[in-house]
Length: 258
Ligand SMILES: NC(=O)c1ccc[n+]([C@@H]2O[C@H](COP(=O)([O-])OP(=O)(O)OC[C@H]3O[C@@H](n4cnc5c(N)ncnc54)[C@H](OP(=O)(O)O)[C@@H]3O)[C@@H](O)[C@H]2O)c1
Image 1 (tube, rainbow, N blue to C red):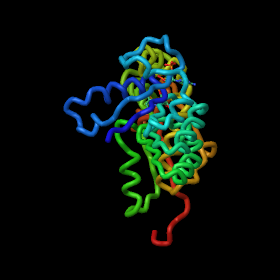
Image 2: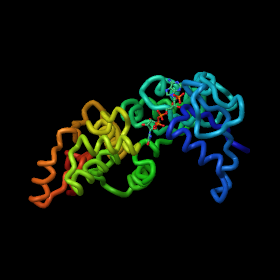
Image 3: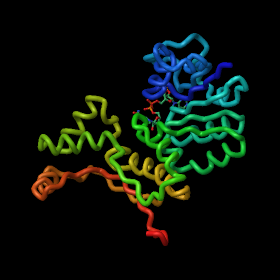
Image 4: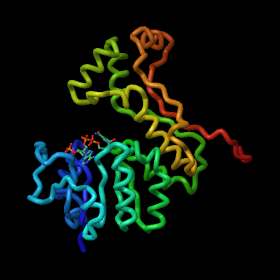
């Protein structure tokens, strides 16, 4: 039996996903059982990096999440709405959901998981945090045996690239940012990365998994790197430090066994 996929979005991540699914050569045979049945986009006229059969791409994303033929909805469109609403509809229609959307998961994760539990379907979100690492599945698997007290890490590639170059070349934030944008490492609007918002979304998700839910995204303190100057970097260096954008979640309640 094969599985029919409805993909919401055909941008950077959507195209990568489609390319991977269409190139099953040398990969697991299960991949051949997955059919890209519908792909939802905003504009039909946009040139795409992938070629799909006529009729697969549509601008009507509602029909994808309501289509009884579709087993799994892959949400790679980004943004809060209509991504959240479409995922909820897919779940209520009995479809498994795979998402890369850290913004929705960090704010509305509980709502989606509750709906998924009621519908008896999965919400898979590995790609929402460090998609290439991976981190979510190992974290979930370790929950039963470990007593996790803290989750800490560098979880934003763009800011790490900028800070590393500022450190190694003595360059200014603005010049490295401009370079990163030219190279495609930073978005045209870099706010989510350089203000720490992307990292805050990700640590809210990791902390919610590690500490059994209940982490509200709006409670995550957030500070970016825009104000980091060459002087800061060189002072840090003189003192034997490097400046990094760290995401830190710590449990404040002490267990009696500690
Ligand atoms: N880019 C990364 O490296 C990366 C890594 C990990 C996770 N993510 C996450 O993956 C998700 C997608 O990111 P991306 O970089 O692939 O975004 P993107 O390149 O901007 O692609 C978004 C896609 O969704 C479609 N779309 C957006 N809003 C829509 C709407 N209202 N109706 C119909 N189609 C809509 C767009 O259609 P058109 O093409 O017609 O405009 C586009 O194909 C985001 O949640 C992001 O946070 C991204």
